[in-house]
Amino acid sequence: MQISPFDGQEVDASSLGWAMSAVSSRAFKLHGNKQSNGVNFDIPMMLPLIDMCNNSFNPNARIVQEQESSTKMWVVAEKAIKEDDPLLLWYGCLSNDLFLLDYG
Image (tube, rainbow, N blue to C red; front, side):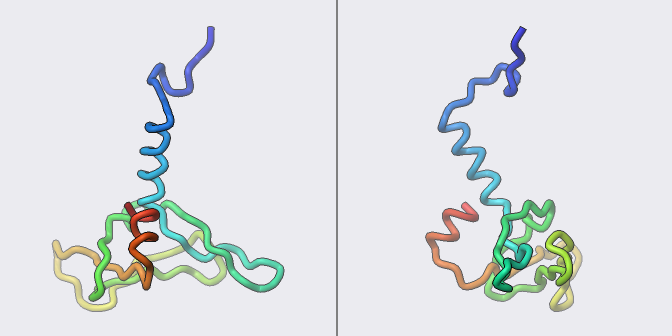
C-alpha cells in the first residue's frame, strides 16, 4: 500500500507555484552567518506574527536581529503605539519588482 504525501490531493505545478508564493510572501531576508570573506549573506526566514506587520514609509516599529545569532529577533517600538494600532515596518528601498516577487 502506497501512502500519498499529499493525503490524496492532486498536486500540480500551479499548486506548487501557489505554495511557493505563499511562503515567499511571508519570509523576511535577514543576515545569515558570515562567509569566509567576512560578508554576511541574507537568508529567508519565516517569522510568525512579524509577517503580519505592514509596510509604511512612516513606521512605528522595526525588526532588531541579535548580532551573535541569525535566529533571534524582536519587533521594537520606535514610538508610542496605541492599543489596536497596526505595527508598521519599513521594508527598505526595494524595487516594485522585488516587492512583487518577494512579498506578493
